[in-house]
Length: 239
Image (cartoon, rainbow, N blue to C red; front, side):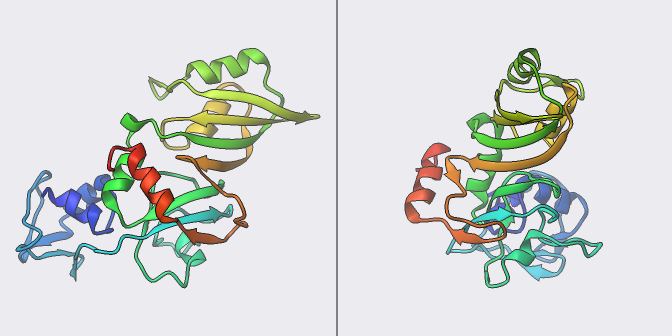
């Protein structure tokens, strides 16, 4: 098994983050630092440590749905002592990591798990997992602006994938949009709105891969049901 995949399965980090840990020399296999990406190990025989701590795969995967408030970083630990989403789940003993991105200023649905393979696939563009946002923007976008959102916009030299966007309501100087995307680029919805001249004032994710925040208050979390987990796995060809 590839080392980054093993670390992902063990809930240490996503595969991309695991590659960074390896490149930084923080991962030891049988006492030796491994710097080469793509290194393979035998999970049954090899001993793996990250920052001195032994890594073992978790036979009991955990799947968490969190209604994230604004102001919390989507990470497990911040070197500057800022609030992270882990602080919202003090009774959760398992070590889980976020699936995809949701910046600190945004709120809403966040999925966390220690099932590395499921997390990797849900976040991979190949599976086109749907994400829906309710966004309050400065000004009221016209039909042409919404058409640009839907057809894709050039951001950092690469066009965004096709999306769905509709104006659901408005008031003087502000518009409320519902935007559905299938990518996961950093701050994508915010940058899309900025590109059409309507900066985001508030952003809330209301749906991810068919999951919603029904009956879940801001700051609260719950475990997914077995049926929800099965549906997510089916969505990304894991079952």
